[in-house]
Amino acid sequence: MSRFAILLGGSLTVTERLMGQIAGARVIAADQGMIHAAALGLTPELWVGDFDSAGSELTVQYRHVPRRVHAVEKDATDGGIAIAEALGLGAGEIIMVGGMGGQADHVLGHFGQVLDLARQGIASLMTSGDEEAYPLLPGARRLDLPAGSRLSIIPFTDLSGLDLMGVRWPLANRQVPLGSTLTLSNIAHGPVEISLREGLAVAIAYPAAPA
Image (cartoon, rainbow, N blue to C red; front, side, top):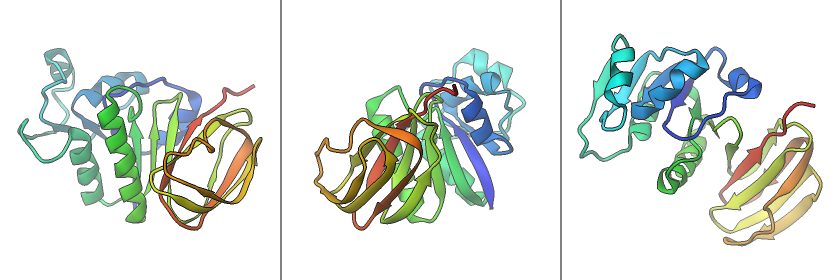
């Protein structure tokens, strides 16, 4: 199965870590997300959306990229359409580049999308370069973070049996109710191990710059 980078219209800082994450990925741009293509040195294989925010300069610059144009009045965001296209092309992993920052409603919608992808067994990551978000479902996962990275876990439901290791303030078998701030602003010592018995959450990391 293929790895896809979806270019979205949120914030983006090009970092060595980000470039490593998307290296070798197939690329789909969602409307204004094409604005990041040049900075990343990428030419998407497909450009989708209603094109209400891309702008004429961008559409001329990338006129050679195949497009699928959708009506403004539709039942999904441009990012949601791009993700559906990637899944239709056999995506086994999706990286939402530019998925952080910008409009809060879209960012929260993206959190829901990565959780849904995880429930389908599709690996997913949201990133702005400076900020990353990972879905957390029941089970265990490892986040490869540089030492000194700030890490928060945002519950989307009540959480049961949360273990958090490799951080300044570890947790063992904790219950974390929806709305709790217990799991905000931890510090990673390096790679972080997380396990969860019940619930849904998103881990948000601010990767520290290499020393």
